[in-house]
Length: 190
Image (cartoon, rainbow, N blue to C red):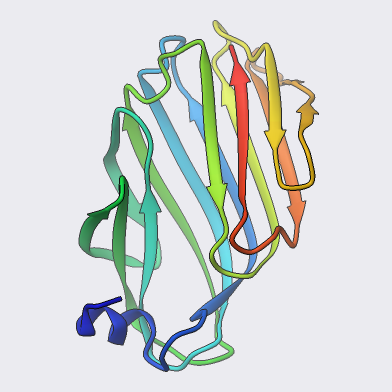
């Protein structure tokens, strides 16, 4: 946050969380058995804790081409920069937010050549307080999930595969009030 311009957009009232996430529902769809094309979608509801927030900070990381298409219903991507292997995306809001205001939005991004190995990982970290988080990973019919494990601060949990009506398999994680600053990861073999 050494940039005055970004600080004014993201944290107009100074340091602290500019918003709390009320609910976040994330989905990763692996489209083909080679893992060459995938889509991340996130539906999120937030409540602002500062006045005048004009932009949101989104992040993307991983292997392969991590950003082939990007859409954010709250606004347009205005800037991007890379720091420590993480791509930071600055999304300008259509109008500055007021403290207490709630905003619902959908984010979608596509990747290429990110999940070609026999084992995969999807990591999530929480840098804003969050009420509820759910994550679904959908595997192609031709290459179902074999084993999936949630790695979390309280210990690992083996996840049950769900058979979808169209023949694909999925795994789902639901968390209530996950620990701020902690990392959660779903590791799988397929």
